[in-house]
Length: 321
Picture 1: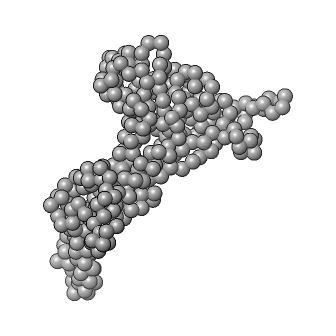
Picture 2: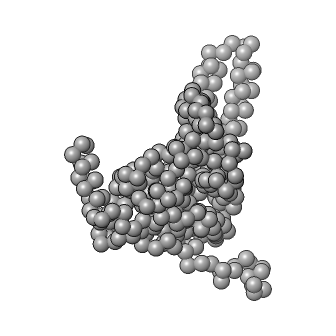
Picture 3: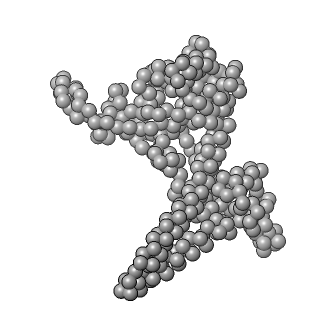
């Protein structure tokens, strides 16, 4: 770094081409007026760069791409665990709005890469189990299954799909910044309502109860002032730094190894070798529920083009809606 850069922290040579657009994107999502406030865009360079690098790293760490088609459903234990049947493999993709939009733009495409997310569920049921040559009935079992298959960020190449996923992760982190600010705005409204109730009680108070209510009102006014101060635009940078400089606290991948048999029944780890465990990657913090995610590669899912099946599915859905 040059002496001028060391003195003034103006090390712009390290800026990536996407940094300034990312700052604009983040600030616009949280509060567009920040562009007119002091310190823009300099105050946002460090947190936005940290979040952007983390988002790309997180997208790069998502496993896959996994081939998803009828053949892989039959041969790949991971794909088999994700779908109830081979038909559901295709149906899940045909129901995707993101793919509908994708094929409108690329109707001749015969393959794509995308991020697939699902909800992992477990339910307890009573079934039969073979132990040696003995059939045991009424055995309590845990069935692992997946619902709400969602396809996002479709692209013609894996790298493009991962880049799009990275921007989705970045937007999610920026959303956490906005949530912090919105929470304080809600706190301020609640505090103002509480203050109004205290004022009303104070007006009707007698000499005995008035001192305690006055003390409580003074304390409440201090809280309101502190909250109002935190909502001044120049303090929003603290929210950006709190979230974006610590992105792993708000969005991360967790690996969950589960031993499953061919019927989706969960087994104890001692029942099978570690190699038989299927590793699922859960995206924590993306929204209120955890998503099991993987990158997928789809090509020639059936003899007729996938775009044709997608179009048929859309027309079928339109009939029933």
